[in-house]
Length: 103
Length: 103
Image 1: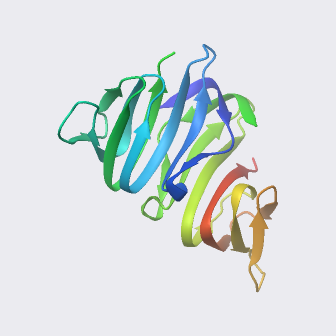
Image 2 (image 1 turned 180 degrees about the vertical axis):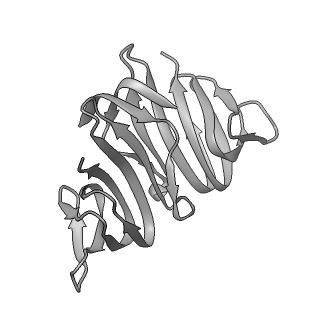
């Protein structure tokens, strides 16, 4: 699948020494998504806007705000993280993802 | 810097267990580039078309076809790999790159 008529920022967004990276895609509507990749590791991220995370490949275990356990999300699945929240994740091998930011 | 009016393939291209990944960007002219990221490691790639590799962040040492030594390429620098060739590289930390394929 492709995103058409978009702008892409050349430089990667780099986190955790490059174990998590993403590229920013901007749509004509102004909507923003990032296409990202995480290697094996435990990570914590904070949200500003609400985020929808779609798994494009691999899998990741995620502890969403207010939840006491981790849930495994696999290719084709997605989850929503509320605005102004933090969430923790464990990646066993790698995960390819698309993150959509609510405007 | 941004690429405007392009198409982006959602799924990542994944090599070497995810230590090398890229996203494919297609321009209105049909020209194709990949925006990629390599973590620490030694890699060998083969070309079909001639490739121009531009370093967007970090650095990499590259042994081009016919050369006996490795050359370090840093942010802002680039090199050309001929078509139908192989080249070897060593990444010490990470490198963010843009690869342009000659049509």
